[in-house]
Length: 417
Image (cartoon, rainbow, N blue to C red; front, top):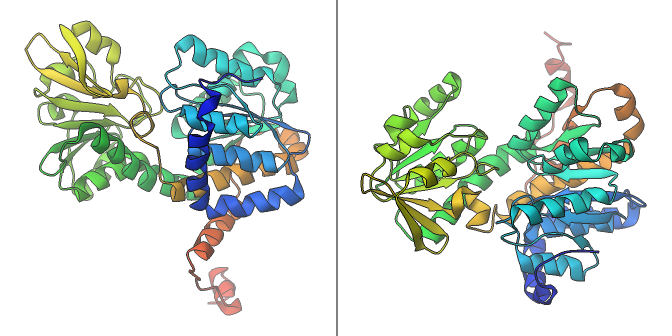
């Protein structure tokens, strides 16, 4: 029971997964533990995460723990068909294909929910919203879930505030070993990997506009600066704007930045970040892309409405000619640039993020009774999981750190003057 593009592509997918696996020692260690412990024996896990090699390895690790996996992607353009084929060849239920239509994408999401999952692993909140809105009869069977990204957590907080959220969700994105590294270093590198390989243009000497200065925005701006760009940050948060200034970047409103920018990267989690007036203010040849989860940050509907001509400028780049004669180039239809135009975050980074995911899912099973009786729906990843992942990672790097002496512990605990 699966739906993929071409099962015959599995050999190419296996090569990709093997490469990822060889660079993900944390998950490899957890896989061996799960094979012995079987923490998910008899349980179904529904997973919606960008379906590429690193995600595929996470699926196999969870399956090694006894889970019956039902897998789909979290973005139509980030699914890699050969990786989906490899997962299916290995016995995992997969519903995903690259370039899926809205109807197909929705059908795939429904398929993994209709399996009746015990645990949901989500990236952006589509599965959690779907089961609440259209499959309320399945809610009572869900132990809980894990959310991978900032956008998904924003949606969860809105659900909790309205009283709609019916089962516990682990805030994986908020774990230190996730957002401090994945969001900053992973996004910083993978966004520019996607931009550079797609445009084949130099970054040095250009004006780069980064919309949003959260951890992802910090990473994107840092890498742009490292490649010799002049960076402009746009923000709505005065504190983050001050951070950007003190980090050495110019800060201004988007409509003003639009007049100066050569390359634009949105990474806010909000909609309509680049709108009509900004489009009209832009230079001829400006390059736009989005690094937020959903394709709403660059207002593509408005851009299509006001353009007089559009077409392919280069593979995965569409140009839009405006009435003023200027052309704006958009990468990957405004979808998540690091995955729709690249291979996503480096394997070593996702090793930490997916280790948090795997251990958080295990935590949900181990603490099912107390989580459901406690009433709290948004659950922070316990510090002991964060620290365990950090210590394991340092160990794989061959690094040891100091430990507090008994005297130091007493001092820090205030028992000595």
